[in-house]
Structures are given as C-alpha cells and as structure tokens.
Length: 273
Image 1 (cartoon, helix red, strand yellow):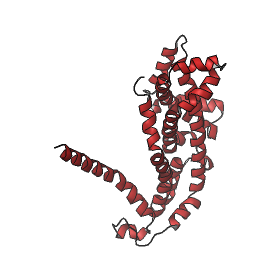
Image 2 (cartoon, one colour):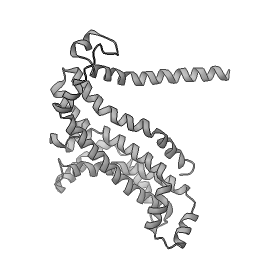
Image 3 (cartoon, one colour):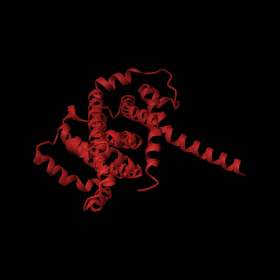
Image 4 (cartoon, helix red, strand yellow):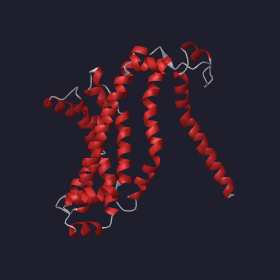
C-alpha cells in the first residue's frame, strides 16, 4: 500500500511538472521556428533551427539594452535589500529597544497593503524628488518593496543564533556593527541567499512599477521592453517568442542553480519566529 501511494504521488508530481514545463518548451520551440512552420507544424522540435531569431530580437528589438538594464536594476536592488534588511533584522532580533515590536509589526503589516494602492503617492513623491524616468527612481521603490519580506525571513534566522556569540564578540572588543558584519552575516549566508534569490526573481519579473515610472526606452527593464517589443512584432511570433525566451531563461537558470539555498534558508529560521 505504501509503495502504491508513493507511485501515485510521483505520477501526480510528474503530471504537474509536465503541465508547468510544456508552455516553456513550446515557447522555446516557437522561438527556433520560422513563421510558416509555427502554423504548419505542431512538433516541439523545429524542422530547421532558426537561431537568427535570437540575434534579431537582441539587436533590432533592443533586447540587449533591456537585458542590461534589468541586470543593473536587479543587482543594485538585491545589494540594497540585503544590506538594509539584514541591518534591520539584526536590530529587531538581537537588540531590545523601546517600540521594536511595534516597528517590526509595521513592517509586516506593509506586506498586506496591495501594491497598486501605493502607486499614486509613490508617483507623486518621485515627481517631487525629480527622479521619475531615471534608474534610481526605479531602484529605490524596488528596494522598499522588498524590505518587509526580507526582514521577516532574516529576523527569524538571527533569533536562532545563540546569544553567546554576541557575548563572546563583545568580550573580544567588537562593537554592535562589527559583530553584525564579521560574526552574524557569515552565519546568515543561507538566509541571505534566500532573500537575494527572491528579490532577484521579483525585480526581474516586475512590470507594473516599470510601466509607471519608466518611459525612456533606453532605461526600460526587460519586462517593460517586452511590451514595446510586442507592439512592434506582435504578428511575428518567432521573434516575439525569442524575446520572451531571452527574458525567461536567465532567471530560470539562477533559480534552478540556487534552489537548495532557497530551501535551506527558509527552513533555517522556521523553528522559531
């Protein structure tokens, strides 16, 4: 009976994987076909691989620029979120000060606010600061939107670290910041990796904020650029699918390469919150 249940569970999981992977396989397949073959053939394997579709999408569709912009936004957002959230989480977890719990609950409550509800005040603020349609004008909201979840994850991790490490560091003459930097951060690498991966996924796939803040094509991230690209090549399905593949494959590679760190980081602070 136990063996039968395991077989059924694995069959169900295989079906789920196939259902999830088929759209991706179909997208890549169409990106490697000609326009005529897409409508003529239902096979996932192209009769003749059209690698030039990727070159055309990269150059003529400006996907090289969009890709570069997304790398910049993702890199600086991840760095900002990791630094600020780790500092805040360390303070909430290891330093007792008046109002710490209230401030922490404010951060957690911010995750319950629908993102579109903050668009109008955010846009007005960015206009007054004069950073609409700039890279910094998009990076700062990205960092802000990623802090609450990051602090929540890291606080649980820091609370699991024995208090004796703080005391030993203090005996050795370490300040609070030195203890945080040289003792806590190296221990918290699994949780930091989790936060970094989640932040990178969110920034790379984000569209709505970029649509509102960025109108200059030379500053558009890849998801915003897809909308412009689709308007130009909506009837040219091979080029459209090539552009979507360029946008999808890098983040999938990062996710599959780092999935063990995601699981490790999430479970590390799950015992005690």
